[in-house]
Image (tube, rainbow, N blue to C red; front, side):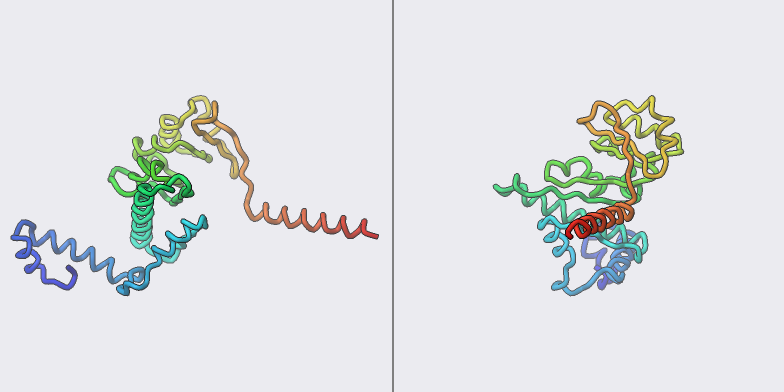
Length: 233
């Protein structure tokens, strides 16, 4: 489509679509094709490699820090579609029950879980049937469509100062959070409340900084080694 004349495209479709429609589509396609994240070589496919790593039960981290928001969302959508499509294909196989589930984690999830229907809202609704889960990270849950938010079984709630954010969580959580609004508002860094269907109430947790955890492990190893050496003679 990018290489064809717009007038030719209009004629090709028996003038059922206006020239303006094709101009918009052409600009969007050109933006995708000529971006730095798309290659015309069919032998190069990072998507297939990612799918294979996930099937091997590996964690795949896609670094999008150097990309524009448009490119970041494009990559996220392509990968999510491919993962769900592959999971649906495996669903028809006899050994589907032996396949490990896949969890897609996306930051700033309110960008893709608002009013418009897309692949992420589809995964939130039906992904669990095909062993594909969605972990949506957001600081503004009020911007996520309430019907989609209700599809999430587990909430890890950090401190939220905005009343609108707290209200949307109260209406969507599996437990009654009405008496915990003050606690949610005043949670400190690293503190959280976890709610899920298997718990009778919201569970308070303390999340440690991962780097500190690694240092603590190394310190314990050194202390253990020193005790062994000291008592050897």
